[in-house]
Image 1 (cartoon, helix red, strand yellow):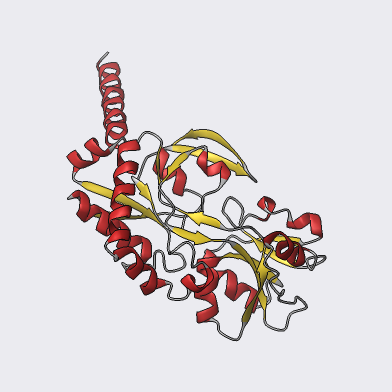
Image 2 (spheres, helix red, strand yellow):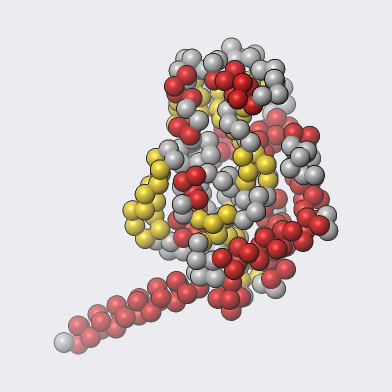
Length: 292
């Protein structure tokens, strides 16, 4: 009898604990009561440098200050980042996603160069756009691939890239914006090679001969072009223009709305453009309309 009572008390404790966690995991009033906002980030392409700064880190630190909250960085990875936000385990295949279980909620906002993708929108609510992006095909210099000449028609430019892919090995990162299945490159004869390391290692992997080419999003490609100048080149676009944004739980509409108000404020006072120029000095040359 005594053992049963102890067991029931332990179970009751865990029920209360998980209820408390779910309350904490909800919206702005509860987050303010706790006094801290938890930023889910992944070291990637100057959004999160891993040295305590980066475009996304600086941005969320400013947001925390705007809210009068303490800032806490929570390191995660591409496989778990959404689960760490919503408390649900997921399985992704192409543009389809399935919930397969529950897990602990570890953060309140994803800001890490997070591209808006169809399947992600089923699970999270996005902020207003933070950054322009696109998927480019990147290869070693002097590969058999030829950089296209832009025509002014993005559909024609994409087709010109796709038509070069027969038999070409291309690095692919499933469950991210660099998932080849989202862009149909295998239909054009590309040989996809799954890549399981840090996304920052994609360009070096191509330089070292792990594949002939890789998919990269624009911010990462710009960083790689500067870092590995003379070793890689842009062949052309694989997708139309996309956007990156911060992501929130669907149960956190007030937090999302407050972030959008904060974003409008820093765009008006010039803070936003200063951050862009600090970490991506050349991106405005590619997407002037976005930064008007």
